[in-house]
Length: 354
Image (cartoon, rainbow, N blue to C red; front, side):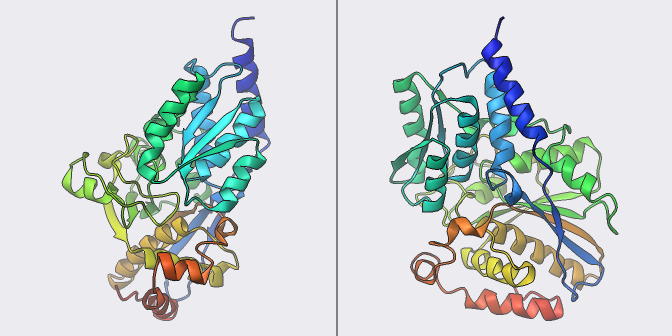
């Protein structure tokens, strides 16, 4: 039968999807914000533990349907970790070899998870080297370079089909403010923000999209200047988000507003969140949530009400040797006590001194 292996591969991915429930929407309890409701969509509950599970599934289906992956194809991906973990999972599901090209600084837990799923890790010294390294390996092994940074925005059906935006609005339908004033998202590839922004416009919803960028990332500069040739010599300290170049999947036209978030604020926010929900989250969640709190502060000052939604991207258990290690924080992030104090005061007053 024509394409029998591809048919079987797609059927396996679809069956895996049917075994997976949707992720939870967590409402934060912040009494000081009367009339302003904040929600976290908890993407850490996917089988591979992060938001990137959705992307990896879409990328595999896209590559299979385009004829780029066949039986025995070695799959190569450039990644800071989470996408590679999820792609290693799907590669094992299909019986395919998988290699992740990633910076040496990638969290050890992510490396262990890639290897657990049967993948191999190829390390480079700087995040800017992952692209060329992936292309070389694909050429040498006659494999397929998945290239999430190019295809993330087009592999997902942004019109609906149970994508993350569709899921958010369905889960919000019975809340006090069912149509969020803002959805806040940080860019790694830019694919998720593209999906959310396009969906909002396609569905003609009265929601705005705010994208929050960490330090040492060029997405914010690209958005404000329009120059997509900007590069940065530094890598983002907030693993999983921020890039040294403007990735093809980042679509500025779907974004209503951008903010750049200090790394110290991102880290302080995950400690604040842990006190609120009793769970650890990765620092990208801190970037997202600090952006939400800035918007909530402005709404509170203006006497506005409504809902705000962002993502809990992955669990903090992956970062016990980085963002939850005081020595690592002191050496790589710095003193975050100013933001810690701000957040504690915010819990009491609803005012964030920024």
